[in-house]
Image (cartoon, rainbow, N blue to C red; front, top):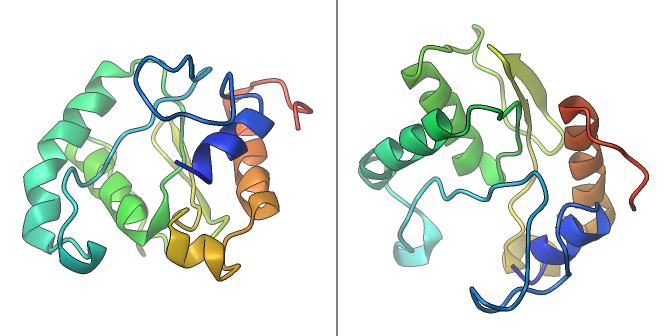
Length: 152
């Protein structure tokens, strides 16, 4: 959250750059943050079984978001979870399977996916993911969603 909330705020997608508690006033605008894996496994490396166990929650979230058109998977695990979830709800991806990369983009059914490196401390502290990089992905997602740009 220390990296994601400021990026969403800079893109005009969050009311403030910091979120610490449920009642701190942070409001997302046209955005929903969903966890592909709902646990913190050892070394932050969820097993395929842990990912599969969490998938029904992700499927249900997708089913509830009728207006959803753009998905920004954070990291390779988020990318893979998105592809599997979309396939499970009747939107299999193209063959060969789209590869994850920062800024990777694919259209699957009615959904556009725009990948981003995960905003973990490992990625942000090393510079693998910078604020401008995440901002560019969020701007692209906004364009694909038909949201006004230029809030940055």
